[in-house]
Image (cartoon, rainbow, N blue to C red; front, side, top):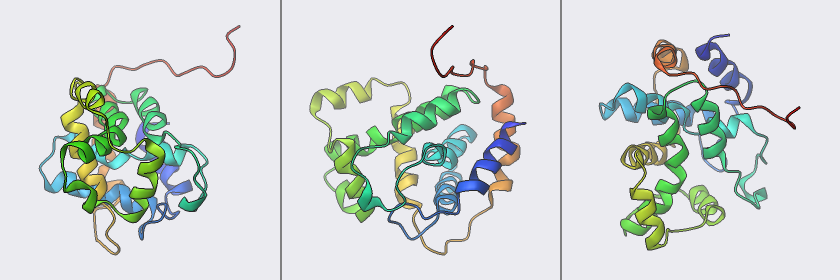
Length: 194
């Protein structure tokens, strides 16, 4: 199965569910984030990162109602690990860093908190809240931290009920092109080594 078909299947299976406390579905949120990335003339890798930044939510079972969340699901790491086996770091690393980018922006931009949705405020508490200054320095040493901040902004924007965007199929050619260009990492093994 090619990567585009794999992604399409994941979104068809789980993307129609509500996006945890927001007024859009998971698919609508992903498509809106990608739309805002395209509107900002982002490079193709960042458009795909924006599209797939929350794929970790679709790969793991988490409570449907955000009030039932008691621990952070670490969807950014789950998604990044999955993406790293299919794309280069230009896609997977901004995804891995998009939650730390939220915490970073809270520390470095006093107006940022006011832009968060109520659901994002709830998850922020589970994700560790604003960064300490030593965490800011560490985050800024990450190769893709600037790209992660951009994905974070598109993530925050992608919660508009009824916004018309291109569909998932409109991104499949781009997904396939980037997947073919990426060095292939081995799939992670599950269970004990034998």
